[in-house]
Image (cartoon, rainbow, N blue to C red):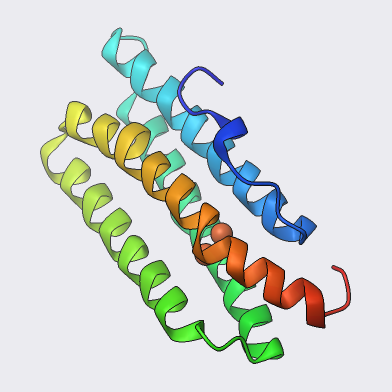
Length: 142
Ligand SMILES: [Fe+2]
Ligand SMILES: [Fe+2]
């Protein structure tokens, strides 16, 4: 994965979270490739837009999975964790809209390959680690 580094993500005690995180990075990697192809004059804008839509759906599912187990187990910091998810979903939607409007691939590349991975490593290493530890101690394995 030349665009994002999966090894930066923590290995969590809940396999479904690791799977969702790996998929998130795989989709970012595909977007990196689509943006590079577009920059070389080889890729269509549509392929970037399609991948952005898939990323938006997957990210929602990923966050919903975590939010469901937090609610099921009565995780005390549910609200700050969900608030952070909601903030990133809104930001991701705004950046996708900005790209659809302006076609500014450099801005989208910075967002997807710098801002999002940085946030992702920080979020999975803090909120997701605490959540996974709490849930794993209380829930049956998924
Ligand atoms: Fe997560
Ligand atoms: Fe999370």
